Length: 294
Image 1 (cartoon, rainbow, N blue to C red):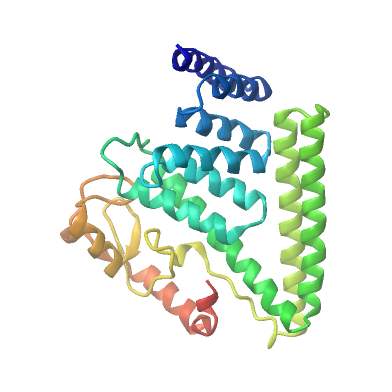
Image 2 (cartoon, helix red, strand yellow):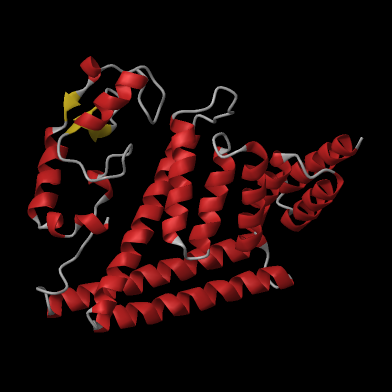
């Protein structure tokens, strides 16, 4: 009886979520948990709505409980939501670990797992976002250890961005902002921060190119299986490029394109000469001196 009541409340919560009524959905999922606390889906659903409400700690707690119920080997959504919350809490190392776990569970799914065709692309994009956040944090730490002014200024901008985002979250919880307004305002804050950071780095690079040479990994050189820069890219018939050794190893286990699930064999692969030239230019720029931080 309790599990049935919880399921009914969960379905009501799902309906509220689809309608954008996130506070209502959160309350219904909470009531469902109170009725029956062993349904992992209730926790992942509540984690999802709490992501919308930017309640990061609540998301972490719900995902941890969901993973505790199911075990750690077949709960890709919980790990994906957990990674998003950890990134929201400025824990890029933990976020990357959770995102990679989610990605692996989608890339090599459990037989009973329900995988959306778009999951792999979404998860791989988020893994890359976490990698970049981790790399940026390491770069700031490197400069800070050198007593670098740029690191101090970037830290000031980062702190201001976080204060502004925290204020948006506080207003959302107080009802001073709607969900759409909060989302748009958060995007604007992040975009403004990115513009200021890029301007700051350009200024320092122009003034002191020896010590402030850009350390960036362009998206186009990244292999979307290992998330590492490529040396010898090959291209599929669908236009996706991968590191040759990586895709060969993948095809030994599954004769499909990792991102699309379309049938794929080694004979379908061709060298991507244009991208290879771009990868060589990346490595020739001196990336090997610092890529270990990536």
